[in-house]
Amino acid sequence: MINRRLAFRVFGPCFGALMVLLAACSGGGSGSAEPDGAADTATSAMADPALRGAIDIHAHLDPDGYGPGGNGRSIDALDLAELAQQAGMRGFVIKQHYGQTADTAYFSRKLYPDLEVFGGLGTNFATGGLNPYAIRQMANVKGGWGRMVWMPTWDARHYVTNSGDDREFITVAAGGELVPDAAAVIQAMADVSGQSRGSNGTLVLATGHNAPEEVLLMVEEARRHGLQVVVTHPLLESVGMSIEQMRQAADLGAYLEFVSGFTRQPETIREHVEAIREIGAEHCIVSSDRGQGVGPEGDEAPMPTHIEGLAAAAEVLRANGFTEQELDLMFKENPARLLGLPVL
Image 1 (cartoon, rainbow, N blue to C red):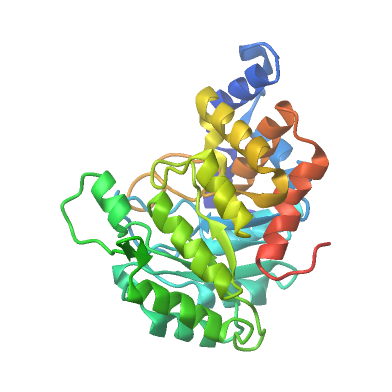
Image 2 (cartoon, one colour; image 1 turned 90 degrees about the horizontal axis):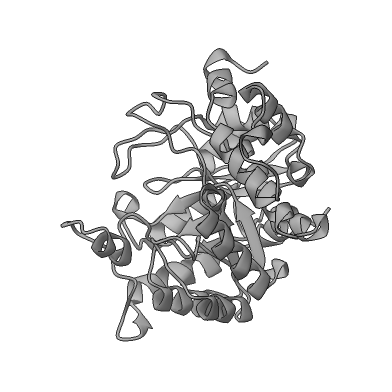
């Protein structure tokens, strides 16, 4: 059973406004489409066919530290494992900016052996920045479930300067080329990919919160080494790629990640629908990027779960003409290919 703390988050009154937006996008009325209760919303999210067999490649979860905003996470890895199992999901990847999560994935799999749970590593200052030794260590963690490496995010030069912060940052490229440390990280990934301890798993490069031209340099270098690559939420302000730049990344063999927060506003819905249509669902992945809480412990207000975020994204995409086959590509098949799993 779901514990009381988790039930508060799952059934909290957090999705009514979004349901109104979804109804408007699909041609329905305004307030009439809002569900009678938040429990109905959560139950509907659990039953969405796009979630059965889905893999969420971007799940923020406790145990984690604070980020720049000082907020905690809304649920932990075992909470999501319970929800994911109930929704029939295939698995998820535990995202951290300031740590590595191969060990959390290991324990999650022990308790939920039917789920494909993976971890990863954020290459920010807390893990040594562009640190190839951290890559090798993650691959050596028992189980070999550390698979994704996020290039700098909260400490990336592009993110720090665009946020107006006055603090140190990590530079991944200069003069139109990757800096040697960034190239060394990609080389280290290539060296250990396919040799993760116990599972022989392949590693995946995620491009982080870097500038579009930096993203393309990373994609090109990683693909040259035969690595799978996902471009981290290219339409968010933390990256800001054009459709043409996204096409270039796709042409190089990268997947483009679109995160579920796009459902919040009509303009972001239009922007994401257009981008996915232009690039093609075969090159795209939809992830949740959920788990951000409110307050230091993340429990000061109910927040949409990863399950609700994914279900909302699926519903919006359906309302805008995407087929179930296209949803299967973006929620199930492409994430599996990215992580080196067989497509079911």
